Picture 1 (cartoon, rainbow, N blue to C red):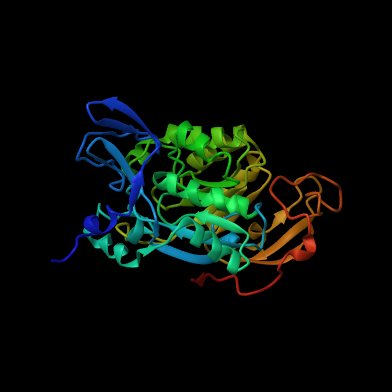
Picture 2: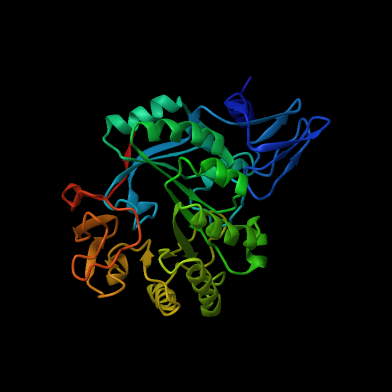
Length: 370
């Protein structure tokens, strides 16, 4: 008898802690802002958190993707530049974006075409995963590829061990978080990349989310002291109107002008194949808007080597070049051990090494499979 995907992944679970018991075996999941009320025998919107006999079961003990990435690929530009990141992901998502570039893992159990993602499952313990990072001299652990919020209990199990081993920990997420999940993550999460997919709630509804939840996450994560960078994938015909980009930039700046904003290029993928790829001129317009809105650090991405200075980091005070990048490769680095501009002494927002001599300059800037 052939096992279904559900048969394969349901045993790879543990008892969840991000939940409320509502009585009669019913639970409310608090891992993401959907706050699904799940009766026995039913599943949450993400499909991978489910109620088994009154007990919330959550993903545990496996990865469906594992590789070493440049930290710039996440993308993080102000979080230990040039570092390698051990990136791990599971299966499932609480959104259903038609242009998802990781749909083979994110849409498992929702789209039968994505069930192939289960073929990549690799059972592994938290201890083993951290050891992989240590064995490969990788200083950062990143939960990514699928939506990490729905597997937060597993991520925390890994991050606890990672922090004890001296590693930094990060999320790459849609930002559909709850205060409960963020408070659980706070002792262990150093950096959080949040997608701001649109400033129109009607667009978020098409993707399976609510705009306010993401805006609240950007603000609350920043208040908690987690390093936040925001990414907007600029999709022609969906969120590329200049007024909408202005709304996004103004909101981010209202939280903090030091939050880096990455405006990145879309390419046709998954179910959204008719929209054209993002023109470079649109990214330039978006970046100009971000800078005019008062953001100190604006980047353009997904088109390595074709957006000029928008890959680099400049001092917001004296405008001197501090980090020269091409694609995911750092080619020059000037920030001091104290995280300041060497020319004018301005504090540069971010998380920086206290040993600039350890920065790896050059290299391939490509992922490495484990």
